[in-house]
Length: 276
Ligand code: FAD
Ligand code: NDP
Image: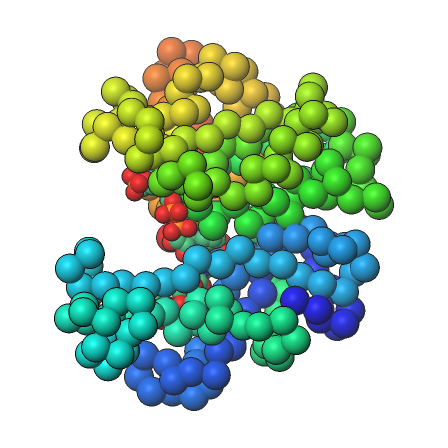
């Protein structure tokens, strides 16, 4: 989206989008929905005038999963005309249905939780599920892509992304390019839940980010222990207990108490999370 330079933001912030509505209770315009910014401060075109989002269209269809509400008249949904009930997310549909040149009402930027550390020697572990990749794309473009900042970072960054299918992998080409250019500083790994299996996942055996991380737990633990390392999470809340699944044994093996270790990490602002 082109904001004409009127919405300057920094990496890790979010913007609000106001859809025309009607909203769930008929309100117009609809209430603000927040979206994590997926571009770095200069924008994808590096003009300081654009902002990019990664938005998942919310569509609930009775018979294909949970669908409590309906906001499309029965039989009128073009994609699912036979469904008993269809609910289409108000704001995500608005954004996903936009055409080039359309006006969009945005507010912000907001949020200070997910910002990058100031220390150029800090290390970063990024844990993302699905669209939770957004703030990490913003960070990684700052570290490894943008003309103004590229080359200044001296730590390492390791991205773990969890998605349902390989075709839902987000920005794969960008990660490949970054890794080819910065092989000693950038690593990325995927957990593809419907295509890989994990014995460690006691819930359903599917491979989630934390289970992929367990495959590298010795290397990761060395990083997590390092006071220069920041662990970011964005996406599903389940990653918080996933982090414990991954590191609790390691923490205890060193004679520490996991809850105290995590409390200390949070106190040092080394474990920011934007999860829902
Ligand atoms: P809504 O219309 O708000 O529907 C959402 C849910 O509400 C549905 O599950 C629906 O079943 C339920 N619902 C429907 N009707 C009712 C009713 N009458 N009463 C109660 N519930 C009802 N999303 C992204 O895709 N990308 C991002 O980068 C992103 N970043 C975010 C960052 C932050 C900080 C936060 C808080 C959220 C972020 N989100 C992101 C989620 C985003 O803000 C929206 O919640 C999401 O797009 C769904 O909005 P919607 O208007 O399409 O759905
Ligand atoms: P997807 O459905 O595309 O991917 C989610 C992946 O996580 C799937 O592989 C899923 O596996 C897996 N998963 C399920 N449960 C867990 C768990 N307990 N621990 C770890 N991984 C798990 O993701 P979406 O884009 O649809 O959803 C992302 C969520 O993040 C949304 O709720 C969105 O609102 C939120 N979000 C929040 C942001 C913020 O800043 N607060 C920013 C962006 C997104 P399976 O196939 O087994 O279900």
